Structure formats: structure tokens, C-alpha cells
Image (tube, rainbow, N blue to C red; front, top):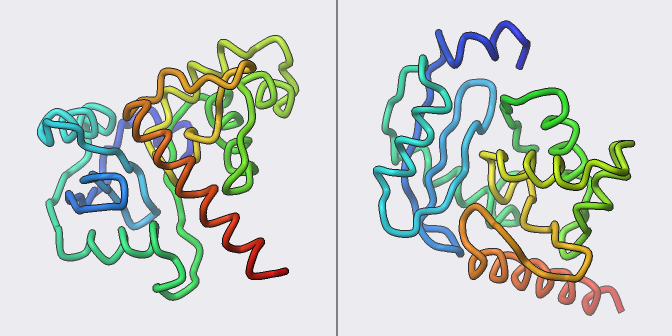
Amino acid sequence: MTPGDFKKQGANLTIEYGFAPSPFGVCLLATTERGVCYLGFVDEDKEELLEQLKAEWCNATFVQNASTIQPKIQKIFYPSLAPSRPITLLVKGTNFQINVWRALLTIPSGNLVSYQDIAQHIGKPKASRAVGTAIAKNSIGYLIPCHRVITNTGALKNYRWGTARKKALIGWEAGKRALEIAENL
């Protein structure tokens, strides 16, 4: 997203969205012609999550379209069942946030790193706290894998969609990775 697009807060942008089941509970997926712009998980209140999306892209036009969302959810969570075309993301953030999110994309599935590791990766070794803040602003859960980041002590803290869901995501990926390793023996 260009700085001009960032300032427009989604003006001239149509966002299709829908709620659908995922392996980790009901999620809200939002997409544009340019890519996925939101993936969040519902705990109790779908409307609250939808309001967060609309606040983030306050000048966009929103169209609910569950029929196009479900196949995209399948592709995201079960990529082996869908054609293998990369999923494009449309992110909106500061340069620092985008650098942090890019670093998250380099963490292999099934692996965990610390906030300090991410800070070092982006060349800001003393910015662990700022890294944590940038990670908390990630609006494209799972695809930008903020769940793969833990504290230096190994604690799972402050996951936007709940610690239990973070544990489930980590466990699911670890299980898939173990299966891949076993199949290659």
C-alpha cells in the first residue's frame, strides 16, 4: 500500500468480507482485489470484530459475501486441498510495522522465535517492546504469523485472539511439521 493509499483509509476500496468456520473457531476474513486485508478470530461477538475491521478501513465500501469467503478460508487453512497460487496480502501500517510483519513471514511454520529475535532480524536489537507493539497491530492473523512469537522465557503472552488460540495454532503447526519430517524419513 502506498503512503497515499494509507492516508485515504480505504477510500475507493471495496472490501468483501464474511464469517466462516476455521480450525481455530469462527473467523472474519476480508479481501480486496489487491489481497487479504484482514483475518481475525471471533470469541463471542462477531459485530465487535466487524467494527474493528470497519474502523481500520473507515473509508472503504464493505460488501458481505460469504459465498466467496469460504473457499478462501479453505485455501488459507488447507492449502493442499486448493490450487497452489500464493495468497496476496494488503497491509496497512507504518514502515516499522511492515518491517516487523515481513520478519514474521520468514519464520517457518512450526518454529517459534522471541520478540528479541525479531528486533535483531530487523536491525533494531533494542526495540523488543516496539516489536511487540507492532505485532499486536497485525490485522492478518495466521497469514502473518504473529502466533509464532513468544517471550525470551518461552511464555505465550498478549495474543490478540487469546492465549488458548495461540497454543492451538502453535500445536497445529508443530503437528503438521512433525508429520512432514516423519514422511521424509
